[in-house]
Amino acid sequence: MVTVVDRSPSVIIGPATFDSFFKTIDDYSSRWMVASFIRLMRYFGFFIAIFLPATYIAIISFHFEVIPIKLLLSLGASRERIPFPPYIEAFIMEITLEMLREAGIRLPAKIGQTVGIVGGIVIGQAAVEAGIVSNIMVIVVALTAVASFIIPNYEMGSSIRIIRFPMMIFASLFGFVGLTVGLMILLAHFVALESLGTPYGSPIAPLRFPDWKDALIRFPLWSIYKRPLSTKAIQMKKAKSNHPESDKQ
Image (cartoon, rainbow, N blue to C red):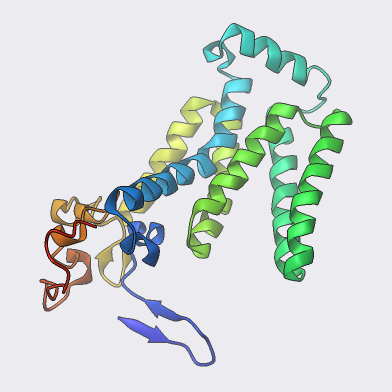
């Protein structure tokens, strides 16, 4: 189903599933190995963007014994001047990052890019030298920002930005146990969601193995000859391509 909104250059396509937010049209014009690698990188970036700051908080606050001793000494040296606990430090940097991101969007394109890059470098360096945050926290926030930009869909990226904060709260309260609880709540919500009567997690939940040819990885185009079951299409088999079957792109 497609909904056209008056005076908008975009259309709303439904039903929407979780994996559809990680696909782009470029995936189908590249070799299947390249497209699969990039798609897997998007999923990896999804988990990094949600769980990396929370994992840092959990490890520093509760589970520092899992860190190798040499790295632990380095972390201790970088945090000895920091007056805030890890979760306050993480919240300061994450909120600063979100403010810089929104400021960059609202400004003209050329100025916005400059504000985002220069502002991030200057503020991060100044915060470290002032002893407000540690240098490892700046690295964690930078990796989180890069991972969140990998997601091709803006709405999904916005959801990730919001989910990150509850995960940080769970980690600051209960460590890895809190992270596990947060992940279970997220999975329960994920399984319960529907889009126009179609399970949002399809083909992962419920499992629909025929649709996995174009889910986590993208199989060669010649092998994807049926439409996804989530589309509830009347004609499930796709029209034959003009390309020969030997073209395994």
